[in-house]
Image (cartoon, rainbow, N blue to C red):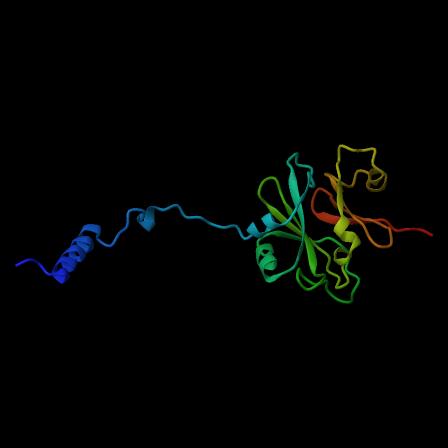
Length: 186
């Protein structure tokens, strides 16, 4: 008597269960798969950076202007943080995330990150003019910015324009990133 359809189906199923042992061809043991770790700064790849040697170490750094979000604040928790502008309020200057809503991130040539922020609620970085910031190379000593900062800057200068037309300069002074503001005399 010939086998019924159901007996054949059970035999085929039984064969595949034991022959495959629950694995497919492309599966590998997870313990031998390489572990991929994502950097907490991966989101920067979505932004367009400016380049320069901001700390004068001879390596190209990347500069990003970003809004302070929970993601960027989390990433900044492991970075060097510089309250680069003077605080104009009463009491102690706020920490990162308690002042202005934007910050500058410098991704150093050696893989280190620095976060420059304005502790003031009304931040220079939160203006339309600040979106036009640019870099002046330390090799271009003919630029007018060098007459202003002199030898205080140890790397390229970050120029942050303002609506008032008085630019603010961010420089590495050899120890920290700081604002080099010019006071306009009437």
